[in-house]
Image (cartoon, rainbow, N blue to C red; front, top):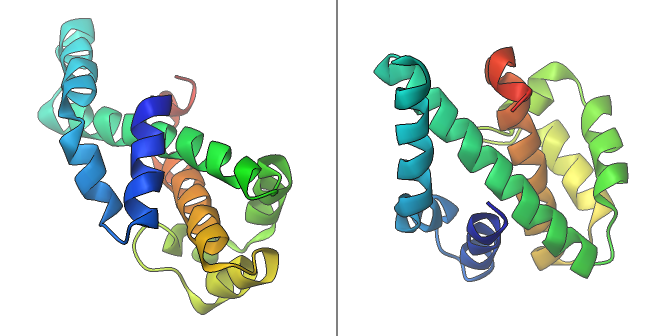
Length: 137
């Protein structure tokens, strides 16, 4: 998952849609999907949620490494994320709200670091808003 996450960060840094990086590394994601099917004959929707959760965890790992290289502390950013109102946190999944953007620009000055903060916070939001049974994974 670390390798997948680092691929997401590299894609974002190159101006490429990060989801393309996830699609390019389908082998690991397909293995996760197959494991879900074997584990309990889940519905296609449940398998999709599990795969999306895996993508979120991978993105979080890659963004954490990038943040450390930027001199930022992921633990402190987690605290900043938790302090955001729920609507701002949930906005990070699709289109960041003005409140979320304000926080991102306040914690990172350089464009690259801002991208990494956005990826990290978006991954946290994705993990937060997926069903609780996947959060323990």
